[in-house]
Image (tube, rainbow, N blue to C red; front, side):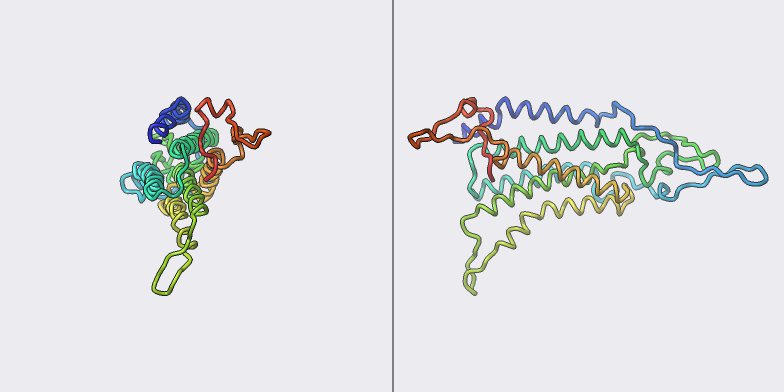
Length: 285
């Protein structure tokens, strides 16, 4: 069984998924510049001919360096690797009805979800070029001229939030996987001194705990003025949408075109797509 699992995990399809994931990260290399919208500054000319510049206070918040943030990028990436990986390891450890090829399905699904999310978010960031709440401080705004002394690209990538989209994508995919496992448990009761007790609600809350982490990450971006609330909400929606799509792709039968078909004598037969070995993965949690 383990040899078969290994063949699925390190198969051609997994390699193609990984290559696609890496291609989706190309915009992170800062190859393209975001849309250069005008600096948000109101120019007023007084009666004596003097020109003054009035800042938009929405973009005049204090900048917090990455190493002082609640959830710096390195910590976010660690969370999005450790929590999904730990959840999968726990499921396999306790043998909660694992199916053949489940590890490959999980890995491919989460890579496709996160890859599509990154490409989607980066494309919107570059197209919109919206200012972060600390834009003035990061660009070194000269308030006498209304010009930036140190032009910044990252300061124009506020919408949507990458932290919110990444955390919701990885964590919601993990929670959906765990919820599927909870639904398939043969028994959801535990024995105590009070007798048998139902623990469905407890299991559901545990399965949803990764999503709670995603909410915390998203909320931290607003608290520290790294993003506007609309940036965070939109990022969370984008990440959630991709997580649901690719979970459905790999853990339900919506796109399953290689089920065993019943022959006229009632016996099952295997289709050509199953014998190909590249997509014979479990399609139901």
